[in-house]
Image (cartoon, rainbow, N blue to C red; front, side, top):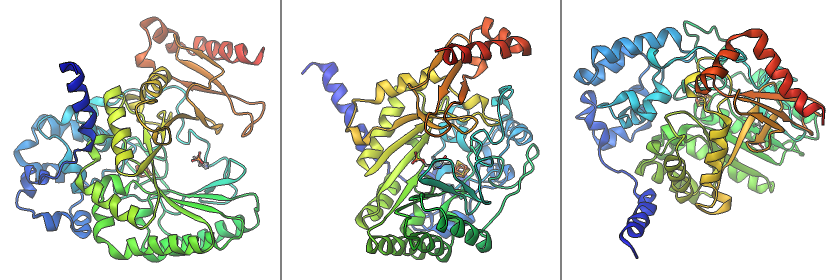
Length: 447
Ligand SMILES: *Cc1c(COP(=O)(O)O)cnc(C)c1O
Ligand code: SF4
């Protein structure tokens, strides 16, 4: 074997190394926190960062005045509240927070924001339009999206539901809601009378924020409906707060009980989680996954493609392999939705297609994520390479969704700042951009 090849082989095993150091001790405010304290879910919740003043407090001298004023400026722009578990906060490289993929996801800086795309929408996926009862989106025939709560253990700056998730910010007024049994009962009633539905995604918000009793109430009420065959609890928790799986026995037992209850009926309960960066994965993740796997609970992952976080081949391959190694099935990688305050996170469709090509072939097919674009306007999820037409020069792709919305055309737009200077000029003029889009749609509709 040549030296280069040997090196290659070593790198191929790198994904099996899970850091187990006491990384939180590098944060000055937590230098004397023991492993036991850090592993306690109550300690994690109590010490979560919810204000930028707390960032300064725990970081001490690591928080430069320059960083602090950029964080303050970020608060004037961001659609999301700040909420970060100590686990994630301590995994940020505070020697260079500017480039850190975890800092980028959870702690917005004023300097990073770009103008929103002219066709952004607060509810880009049209979830409210396809909603027959509050808290429920019914777009596809046999599966529905249920949002029983709008709170999460961390808030992602790039959240696709920034219109409702977490508290209001300086730029967005929100109708945030917590648990509401009456409204949930209305959802169950709707589902009882809609026999086509077999599959319920319980998202939000985050299932980690449901109490054990709520988790069971929702799960068992759904599973009792004869035609419901599968439910999935969506939580980012395993990625950003694995200590809960390991130390909140009541919550974990509730999940197990719903899983057992479902198996008795010959039905499925799975967990969908949300790792976007390999930097979120440590020995804690491995231990949490061992516990879930030994209980027979299947976990799948949905990642969001983000500029400077995971849009390079090495990172995406590592993330995919690590998830597979942990018994988490990489399910989707999403093109970033066209929601407010996220232009700096978005990538071109071309980048998504190229990453799909690079990742496919690196590991087992069933552990290879499908790269999808969830079409603005409610066309649903489509494979990134299944567009009808793509004007790459102007960053305009045209799509169809034959089953979900027959006869309609959908468009997705690349971020303008990544286009050529000439194309950026065309986009700057309202008449020209309208015309470019109509021309692109005409290319498809004329066929
Ligand atoms: C994503 C989504 C689902 C679930 O889709 P899968 O492709 O099965 O994961 C269901 N309903 C809505 C509205 C969705 O956005
Ligand atoms: S965990 Fe999900 S719902 Fe919550 S803020 Fe992040 S992306 Fe939004």
